[in-house]
Image (tube, rainbow, N blue to C red; front, side, top):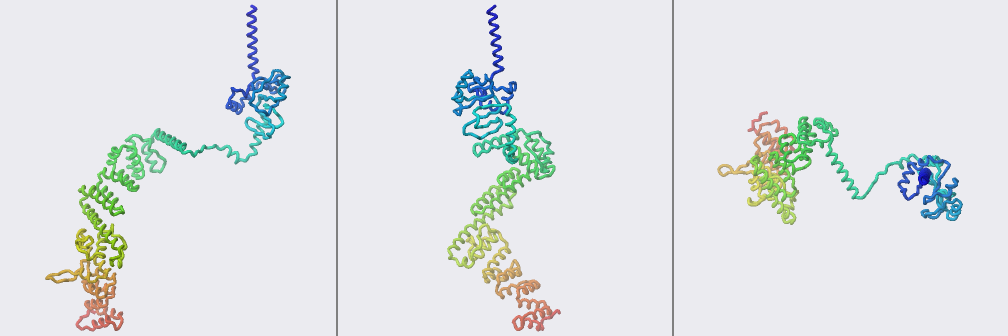
Amino acid sequence: MSSLRKSSVEDEYWDTSRASAKKNKAFNLFDDTVSVETADDLRKSKRLLRSFDDDDDESTDTINWDGTPSAETASRTPQPTTVSPSPMHQPIKSSLSHDKTRERLQPIQQMTHTRSQSFTIDAQDQSTKIESAGNVSFQPDSGSMLYSKSQEKLSTSLSNTSLNNQSIHDVVISNQPKTPQTNDPKKLVEQIQFLQRQLERAKASGGSKIPVDETVQRIINGEQYSLEMYKSKNDKFALLDQAIKLHDGNAITAIILFIKKTIKPSIFNLELQRRPVAANHLISYMKAHFDLKELEDLLGMLGRNEEAAMLKYKQAVSISDAGAKLKSLDMCLRAHFSANPQLSSETPLLQEHIALLERQRPIEDSDRKAELSGTVMMFKQYPRKASILNMSAVTTLYYCCFYHSSEGENHLACPEAIRKQHQLTDKQFVWTALSARARLKQWNSVDELLTTKGWFGGTKARAVIGFDRVCQILNQCNPPLEVLTKYLKLIDNTEKRLELAKKFKCHNVVIETLASMKDRAQLEFYGRKLQPGTIEARSAAAALNNSSIKWKN
């Protein structure tokens, strides 16, 4: 019984000791088991203060750095223990005896701390006071680290006072969120890739599918719309059919481009053939954006061979280099024109174009060299103003009539050879050759051009363009009066001859024409305008005095 009683007494003693130790256990903020993050969280949330709410406000438990209670804890004196300015990380042993602890602390100034919510740390050369959420201050008078719950309100009021001293601008700037910025190319690439992945996920997720007619109406009204939500082929072409039904070109173009990117080319081409309106809009879009390669393939797929051939021809003509243009035209002829019976009427025209370029290139090379050499007087007297390359057949004929009028038919620059190969009419040839010879003032050559053989081996003057036009062309080059008079007299229409004679001031032709018309009044009126004593004035007077003429007025 004595042993049982003894064991129960021991159990009761140890239970009471545990409860008392648990109740009076000191919380060591500087213990090795307490991390910096935990201590900071406790300071911010003021959990440290709340953990001691049950304690007496007047009492303060002081512990050493190694967790042992100091001598001041037993005496319960509010005076803080002095702190040594020596390094703080050296562990200092303390005694449980009050008197011995006092004697030890005097020479080494052992550092202790008290459980409180505000810390006062003193140093020898520091006089700066820092107020924060933890309410830490440096004061030179004291040497202890002390916390007092009674200073909480004072610290808060001091922090509020420092905040009130700031301006509104400083407070706003200090509270603005700081956006992290970086100039590292790798990080920027990673951010871009992340955003791209986010965008792809957003497109893949789509959203609630809006009715087709509502989406088309949004496109027409210029509102926000998304076509990514329409995944099936039927939905996509339902959009296109609705846009075609409403006759809106912008909506048709937007939808057809979306379908083109999201559907297989074979299916797209098949459905596009069934919708010519959409095909026309797509063709117009490609022409405006110069997608000529895709446009050529599209026209060939749609069976529009004539449009594809003309597109290729326009591309070839737009080339500035003569050699490259010649090759491109030859390829266009073989690929699009010769193999297509529908273009049989246009094929000869393209062949003539190629032949003209083949004629122009050697003429241009030869004449450029001759002009640079300076040995040909013709190029010195009449310098060339432009290259003959890429000129029309009529312009090429004029050039050759001007610079190479005496060349034989075997020469590439022969005017007659150009006339025959390009099948120029007599009017085209006479007008062009007459203009070139009149500019060169080759009047004998003009006569040869306008003289043809008549019946029975005779010759006569003949102009397929009419002598009135011949006179107009000659008058532009200031011909001699007798040359102009000669061709004015060959005009059959008297009124036209009289009009041109007055315009060109050929007085003899005017007098002869009025006399042949037997118009005495006009002849007298015209004679009064002539200078007296001149040959023309005497000729007009002789005509008026001619008794053989029966005047009508």
